[in-house]
Length: 564
Ligand code: ATP
Ligand code: MG
Image (cartoon, rainbow, N blue to C red; front, side):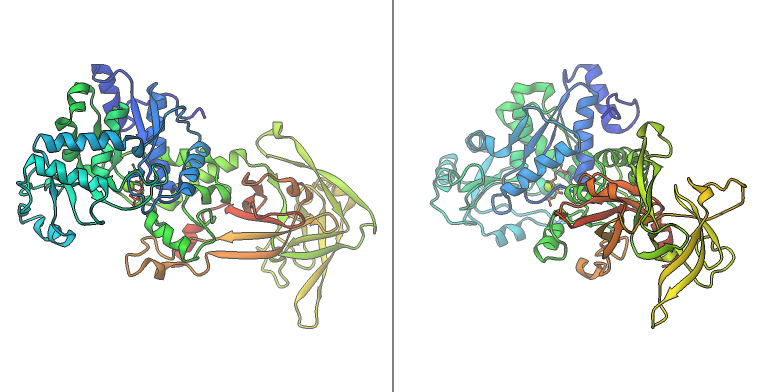
């Protein structure tokens, strides 16, 4: 992890602000936080936020907290908490001892709510949710004061304590800040601070039946933790005045003075052909439209990891996308370039055949076999070589043979010579067919003088194809993936589900891999020559290898787009 150690001047406006704050002395040490709500798995949009928050903390010698924003017990689960921690670590970041939960602060937040009531800055409202909605007004129309707005401090305190004591059912009352029902900013129209929810919480159990809202918990949690830069996505821009109002009107604001936390907003990641909404991803999982949160088609960190995408590629992608103030849609090709660049550098080379066609070398002695040295990485001699077994019967890729081939087809066709990668030159003599006329086997001859793939007489052979030895290859299931959606802007036309790609998964049951792949580590991508990058799936069991194609070798999107 050396790619994000030093800040780059002018790299983005967040880093500029932080550099200036350190320079002016407003803050002594940068403290950021990544604040997921544990109601789903993290996705690549979250990765952008993680790389930013943990990245700037590291670059500026500060710290980044992991804080679970666990204020809504109706949707939060331990499974998500565990997955989020694992995913942040896998991405290469570490919060050290700084693991926090908004629920750690429930008692303090409650005390602050009473403080606001005591200063005439909050009141208990008995209006129904529907009444509150209509009284809130619109962007062009001011709201109306609640009939309960002028309750006495004593009455408010009494009611709020009874809310906490569990005297009222869900939705009967809320605590609201008393700010301004005519404010041009809807978030300042007496926002709700507490709601009644008779629900057990994963961490606080049945201690509470009232829970703070995001707005009341977030800024105060930042203040308690000494967060200096509270970086969030643009949709919270209109919440910033409330964020500031709350800190100013609570005792902690005075205490912290100029070093109090400040909120900064950046554009969320939007990725073409991808949906980054936890609500929708939850739906895909619940409706069984994918195999789970870690289905390799999912844009989740867990899905990308299972697919074989390295953490470094995700970090590099976040760097390439950058941090800006304006929303935009990022082309999926930018992501794929980051993945290919990383894998091209790091993935060992192997050979595999996805759609096997038997090739018999008639003049290769029966029962004989040999091993050939194959480079593990063409650009990295230090990666060494491996031994690949070779024999009389091989498998090659079905589409590397064509019976009536045009002149520019340099692979196998009767009478043509090709190079078997790392092995020999072979010439196709005959295609054997079954009763239905399908080619089932190729008969070839090889030139024993061409071991390693070079002709001593220098004759020209244009085509090189990959192969595996039939006697030694290991069978495997290979899963190929296409985008989960058929359009770059899923859901723009109708329901998102209507835009799901019915062909996003193709399973090939009868693939053959070179023996070295039997020992491949789960989720560590290799390049299968000419086919793309593949990673062993955790579904693999004894005697049953499963691989996922991480990504093809070239930009398949360009093709898809051109083809409509
Ligand atoms: P929801 O609020 O619907 O549960 P969320 O995606 O906002 O979904 P959070 O757990 O609140 O989920 O997100 C944690 C952090 O990640 C927040 O600071 C949020 O701003 C950030 N984040 C979420 N989605 C993106 C995205 N697409 N791009 C960048 N940052 C994101
Ligand atoms: Mg959120």
